[in-house]
Amino acid sequence: MRCERIQDLILSDYIDGQVDESNRRLVAEHIEGCSACREFEAAVRAKAVEPFKDARKAEVPVYLWEGIRRKIAAEGRTTGVLTGVAMTLRRGLEGLLRIPKPAVAFAFVAVLIIAIVIAQPYFEKGAIDNYINDQVDFMANLDSDDANGYTALDVNVNTGVENLL
Image (cartoon, rainbow, N blue to C red; front, side, top):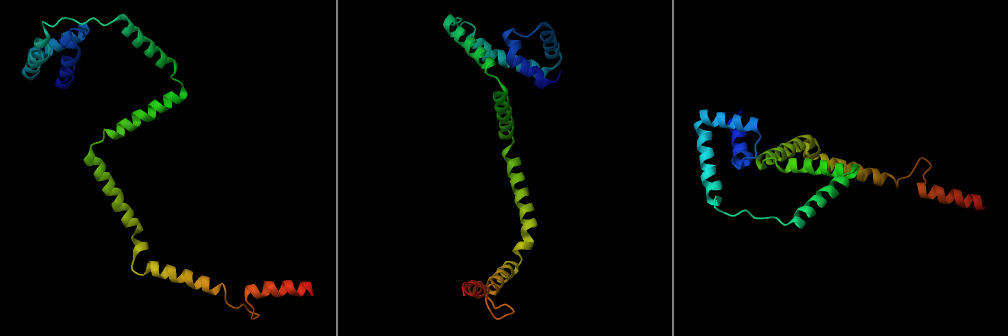
């Protein structure tokens, strides 16, 4: 096992004596051969175990354990499709929040640069002015005379008046 895994076991179950026998042997063998992990184990014992060696064990009231069991059982029963989807989304969002801030900043800058490069033709000098002028010309020509000398509005009015006469 790697030192990181051994140190995780030392911090959690090994020091407490809660690790299973096979892992206990693996950790003990690793500590014998690795001075860094041996020092780590000694430091953990000195800082986390020794100060509490003479402390009396607190008794947890039965009602508290029963309340915890009921809550766990209730959560297990309410796990339906929507709860499963919500939990999956929550884990995904938690994963996104664990992304280092420099990585997020780099990604934002990269997206910003790509957007500027893609949008650059639209921001060329005069491109927007040309577009606006084309739209203004189009709107102005909507009211111009057609081939008969009448505007579109006049033709509709005259046609309506001729039908009445």
